[in-house]
Image (tube, rainbow, N blue to C red; front, side):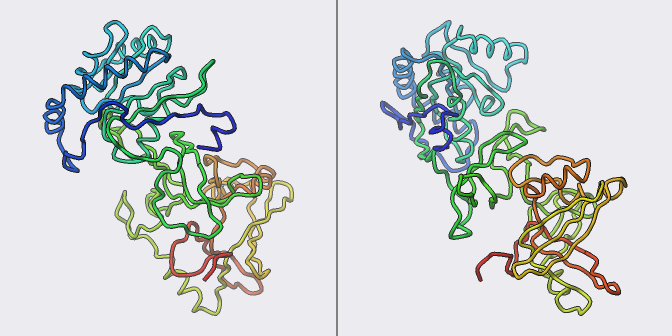
Length: 390
C-alpha cells in the first residue's frame, strides 16, 4: 500500500486512534450476540454522543464522512447525534430503491454523513470520502483494510483521508498480519489484487529488480464479501490462487486438503504420488524450475526444465478441441492476474512466463520416449521444490 500511495494511485491515509473517546469493546466476550452488543452499547450513550460531537467538528473541513456502526440500533443512535438533513443510515434491511437513492445523494454530496452496518465495506465507490469513522470491532485485518479503503480513492482537491478508530482495533494499515512465517529469505511483502473481488491482499512473495511480482505464496484471497445465502453477513472471498482440483467434481480445494470440500472425494496425496514414482524404474520425476515454449503452426511444445539441465516435454495441438481444453485446464491460471482461457498456440507462447508452472512433472517410459503422466501444481509437502533450500 505504501508503494501505491507513493506512486499517487491512492490517497494518503491519516490514521488516528480515538482522539476524544472510544468504546471498550475488550469488555465484550470474543463471541457475542447482537443482543449482547446492543446491551453493551446502550450503556455507553455518553461515549457515542462524545464521538459524534467530535465527528461533526472533524467533518467541517471534509467532503464526505462514512461511519461504520456495530449494529442497526447503534447506527440509529449515531444518526440521532449527527446533523439532521445531512445524515443517512443504510443497513441490510434498507430497500434497494431507498439504498440507491441515498447512495446517489451521498455521492453527489447532498448528504455528508453516511452511517452503515456491514453493507458498504466492499463494492462501494464514493471517491470524495475523506473521513472514515470506525465505531465497531473488526475481526480481521482484511475487514479493517476494506473499511479504510473506502476513503483512499483519488478525488479532485483531495489530499488525504482521515481514518479515526473509535473501537481500538489496533491494526497496522500498511503492513497487515501475514498468516504464515516468511517462506524464503528473499521474500518480501507484496500486494496482490484479487481478480474476483479486487481486494488488495498482502502476501509473502518474490519481486524482480523493478518491484514487479514474479511469485507469491498466497493461497486464497483474504477479502470479505457478502454471503450469497445471507447478504447481511460477510464471508471470505472464494478465489484461490493455489488449489488442488478434485478429479470427480472439479471443485477447487485448499492445497493441503485431503478430502474434497464439495463432494467428499479422497484427494490424492502428492507425497505418496512422488514416493511411488521415485520407486519405479519406468518413471521419471522432474523438479520443475521453469517452462519454455515454441510453436509450430497452431501446435505448442512445452519444455519443463529442472535445476540441473534435465528436460521433459509435451505438445498441445490447438486445432483439436480436446487438446485445447486440456491445456486450459492445466494452464489457464496466471501468476498475478485473473485466470483466462487461451485460444491458440501463439497466445500461449506469448503468455508462457505468466503461467503457473507445475512444481513436479512425472513421466512414464514408453519405448524410447518419456510420456508425461502427472503434473503436480501448488505442492506443499516433504519433498524439496526447485530453487528451494534444504
